[in-house]
Length: 89
Image 1 (cartoon, one colour):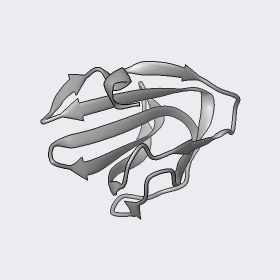
Image 2: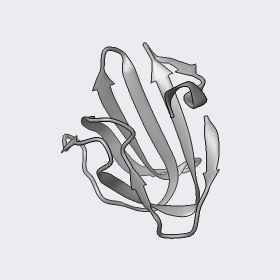
Image 3: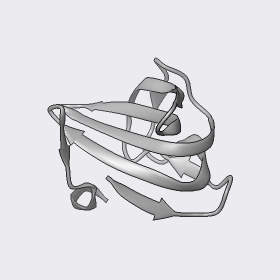
Image 4: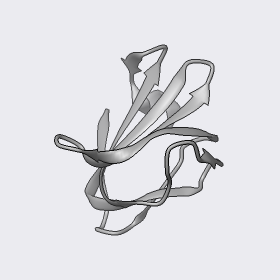
């Protein structure tokens, strides 16, 4: 994944449409969201100050899903394996 610098509280947008599969606090990632986009693609957004979605929510591309903490850590998975997120931005 990559760290994207941003100001505290900035809205974090979904990279693409999909279904929220995780929206919770984790010890290493803080508040984080995972979205299943279908066809084996999943995105993850970590280190948020707060969340704007819940598990099961259907989100559209660009929809606010969370609000940033000190930065946003963005990861992309394809069929369960990490892939370079820069290829999907």
